[in-house]
Amino acid sequence: MLEIQNLTKVYGKVKAVDNVSFLVPGGQVGILLGPNGAGKSTIIKSIAGLLRHDGQVRICGLPGRSMEAKKIFAYVPEIPAMFEALTVREHVEYIRKAYNSQVSDDEIEFILKRFELWDKQDKLGNELSKGMMQKVSICCALAIKPKVIMLDEPMVGLDPQAIKELKEVITELKGFGVTVLISTHMLEMVEGLWDIMFVMQKGHIIGSYRKEDVGNKELEDLFFEMTGGGK
Ligand SMILES: Nc1ncnc2c1ncn2[C@@H]1O[C@H](COP(=O)(O)OP(=O)(O)OP(=O)(O)O)[C@@H](O)[C@H]1O
Image (cartoon, rainbow, N blue to C red; front, side, top):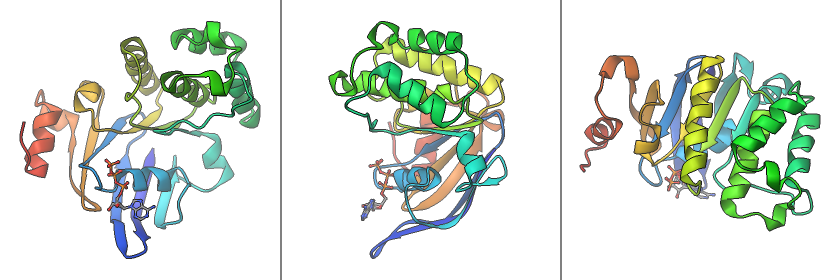
């Protein structure tokens, strides 16, 4: 479960996020939508612990800043940060050790093969394309076997095969009871994946829908209904 309570973030005179609360239930996929400047990245960075903010973040009931919460929480940022002098494999091993992860060698092999990095294990961070960096970032997140995972625009820059794998991974994670939060503009990419959606505008959540309540209605239609835009 991922719970945000009364989150407020002010940059100078700009209130980027204004008293926002929402909850993604355990084992569900939540998506955070909204036009440019709505405040999505600010929320994502606040949840990830990268910004000072008011309000609470709880990860499986634990305070977001606690060590216990950090151990079970994975974050895939929009712009991956690589260590230039570490290889692909060393990135994964570093995370594995830092988190004291129980992931097995076979599982690591499976993850790396899945994202077509198995034969690129010895490439250095500064030798990777942006898409490859994103894949490494996803593999590192999976290597800690998180209970909650948050992905910021995860599909941008990935090739079609990687997008397909990522969608399958998200469905599998959900099956294992992992809570997922995805921030994205690419509505068609998360169609069929989501359980609960939140729409932000001007620092507020202006509405949310649960998949079970909207039947086959398309995400895009739901989004434009709320934001007043159109196809
Ligand atoms: N470091 C910063 N300093 C000052 N203002 C900021 C900063 N970062 C974001 N903002 C402002 O906060 C508001 C929300 O920005 P944010 O990046 O969270 O939006 P977003 O929904 O992620 O947008 P996008 O879809 O374009 O990525 C905007 O008005 C933006 O100008």
